[in-house]
Image 1 (tube, rainbow, N blue to C red):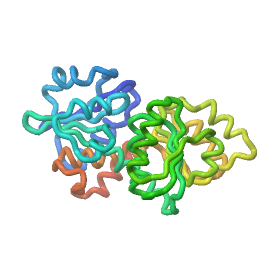
Image 2 (tube, one colour):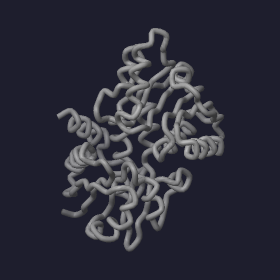
Image 3 (cartoon, rainbow, N blue to C red):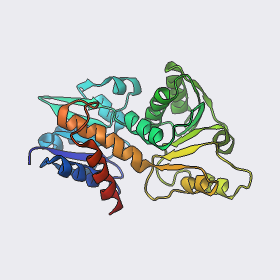
Image 4 (cartoon, rainbow, N blue to C red):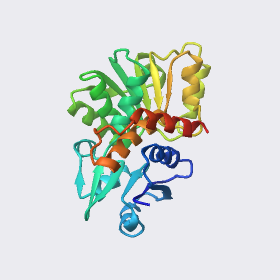
Length: 279
């Protein structure tokens, strides 16, 4: 095999990345290997320096995206902006970091709806929420963003980051009220983290979200939050859409070093990834 890649994170058993990467490599005619490893928070540097010796690159998921940025020798502009990376690639003796989550979120939303976005809601304040904020700045420059998150420190940092991108960002006090205003809601929380609140929304007769939901969690699916939106006849986008498109950008990097260089027969690659997820 020419190259070895893997997805790292915790928990990792439910990851669909090996499925979609393997399907993509097959279409591209690449004899590459892609596996997964459980790596807990704080363990990335040790893993890369030891177990990672034979690998060409890694995909990073929760909770390693901030660590990936700090481990890298070279970082792309989006990683520098968000202080988070989801892709590491070895180039000679150095590790290069990229953030393809922003592309994944942008694609997932723009392909699902072309409606104008004047107000967005981001649920959560971690690394993926930061990428969501960067995505909104691309989809709807200068628009309003509401942030719903419990952690005061990370919430404040996320709000400041959004404002630095020229967005009008403020804290959301209520999920129900904010969702009624938001043309796009992006939940960046792990699966199950917001189930109790979502069940209340679904049961409420007066709750009606203003626009689509992108729930980056895809296990289990549909999530309680997705159910709440669907019961009110609003569009829901699974985190699998984001997963596919951030992976497309990763594979572009693995193949050419450039996240913007389209893959040969990329439409067929995306189709193969979708089929792999349905099997």
